[in-house]
Amino acid sequence: MIFPNVAAMRAREWKDKSSYTYGLHGTPTTYQLEERLATLEGGLQCLLVPSGLAAIANVALALLRTGDEVLIPDNAYGPNKSLAEVELRHYGIRHVVYDPLDPADLEAKITSATKLVWLEAAGSVTLEFPDLIEQVRICRRHGVTTALDNTWGAGLAFAPFDLLGDGQLGVDISVHALTKYPSGGGDVLMGSITTRDQPLHLRIKLTHMRLGLGVGGNDVEAVLRSLPSVALRYHAHDAATRSLARWMKGQPGIAQVLHPALEDSPGHAHWKQLCGKSNGGTGAAAGLFSVVIDPRHGQQQIDAFCDGLRLFKIGYSWGGPMSLVVPYDLPSMRSGPSHHLKPGTVVRFSIGLEAVDDLRYDLAQSMARAFAVA
Ligand SMILES: *Cc1c(COP(=O)(O)O)cnc(C)c1O
Image 1 (cartoon, rainbow, N blue to C red):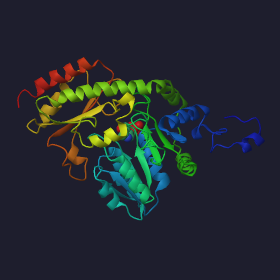
Image 2 (image 1 turned 120 degrees about the vertical axis):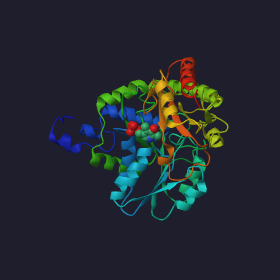
Image 3 (image 1 turned 30 degrees about the vertical axis):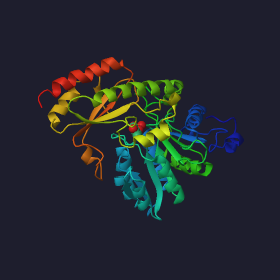
């Protein structure tokens, strides 16, 4: 930003969107995307950051001080837990892991030191859907700030700031990895932090400014170009995913299929309550599902199954046009027991925009080869 004279430079205010002073703190291009995302999620303020993980870190560093505690669900996005386990610990901030399927466990772990509770619906990798309404009620009752990792819902599956549809109950903060659906191309990294409270927003924004977490204008431009098609893409990914998840349930060697829209998937009733009415009553869900592969198939067979897929590529992330697969070592990722999961190895699929018949054929051919020798 070049100012016409010194008086104009002194008069500039960067904390709201009336003008701008320095690209790192926001430009008209970033303001545009921030406003559209706030509208999408039902928030009033939004801040862009260089990644979804930067959004998580920005919130934590803005709200937590030495001696504070942060509560994190056991099935949270892994790097959120790592941030707390290592970086936050160095600052004397304690993290406590709670059971996402047991609101009583969350309530029992809130203490006078608890300053932030992370929520995630559905959970990462295992896709359990929590009783988000009850979790937010509990945090409200104890006066604790809630931050939802809303990457899965994308502002489309449910309204994070209006969980009951009457404007009475919502999270305080919604963070979103724009890297996934809003970008849609699998080629841009970005995150957002949306709120409905100006003082809370300002607190996060000042930390954002001090840490230098601004985003590049060309990346913002790419997300602005993709955003108008996000709902169409989300629901297309959803339909294909549900069709494949249901089909996988009947396949030999598959002990369990995890997708919140499946009746027997953990937390299905909570998914139905929160997301069941969207998209004309079919409900809405992201394009992810996981399977638990029967323990009679060893690691070598599971690796061979993933390697044998031709359309599915091996890779993390999701929300792009290309289908992806990742096998996980779940016991190394969870603190507590997972009684709701069958024994076996978890493999996660992210469904892209390829023809669903081709994807089904690909899964069938690779399973037939890899699992033939049981
Ligand atoms: C991918 C992801 C993130 C992090 O996003 P990046 O832009 O890759 O840092 C955060 N939360 C969830 C649930 C994610 O899937």
